Image 1 (tube, rainbow, N blue to C red):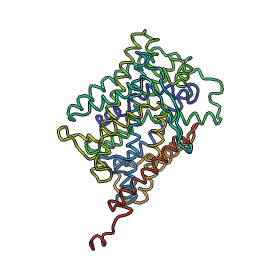
Image 2: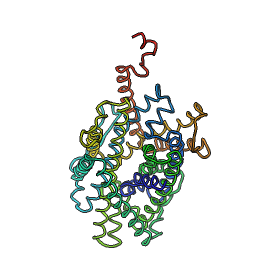
Image 3: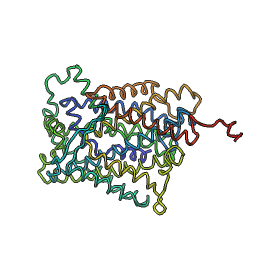
Length: 470
């Protein structure tokens, strides 16, 4: 169980908390934005209980792909929804990977400030104004793309070598978090950390809109708590281990994140963080913090360590996500090309290269847009289907063995659904990312229906009696 918890934490802790604190502070305009972290942890636990029950009920590998098939029926709606899951992952996974690459380039800007120079920024609108996209080109953009391609290069080899690289990268992640927390706690200034602006807790529309934006960023940072569910076949006693690893990892990481971010606020004034988010520059918060505590040398070391952390995050994400379209293609429920395996290295090379290419393109987007689009797409096409689906499964198959039963059922599933809906709707300009998700959903539905028609699959499947006649 300890190994599974540690593995889950490795997937949860990436570059996110080091690059998003300016965004979460700017969302609410002050330290009260830490409410986003706290509520984010609460809803992560609620959703974690959903994953825990599903993971113990269906303890094999596959995660959401398998759960959606089982909940909604493998030969009808479940086949369609599991396809949609892989379809959205083909876009949301590159967004997640791109966020890590952009994070690395932001900290590289601390070491060489010319990387922040803006060469091109422009917002493009669709012909009817339904969609818009902002492209941002700086020298750091090309470093982000190079990071993505470098990780693809590292992964383009045998899996045994990849495992050794993962352990080496993880050591840098642990060391970075430990140093940041120790430095922040030992130099903590409570007056600076809790310098709330006037009317910080006035419960008006601005407060609730800001809280929704803060929770969206927090959701991005906490995500990964479910990754152990994708590895059920490789875990001993998964029906018992998966639920515990999920719950323990969420609690431990939540404590680490909250302590780390409050300690940063005790060193770097929140108004400075707010200005960084609004200017889309100077996101290297930890480097600034270390420079002020120990001198320029510490800032440079912090930048290098966090760049290491970002590289580990991108490496891990590419490794894990590249296996999902591959597995779906083997199951006959995704494009056949993704089932290809490299003849020498025995890795799903088409899936790996495709995700790397799309992630490189997404590096031209702004960090705030990447995170918002990623979270909204996943909530709409994956998470809500599961939180509602677990109730559907209980009603449809009450006799199903459930080694772990959600505590206080159905309250956690209902609360997680409410939390996800709040993040989707209660934000400034929330409709922008929702439109992205709707377009992706419509496109995925059309692609599925065309494939199903050509292959005589649901809902165009030929009845068994007719097949016999043929």
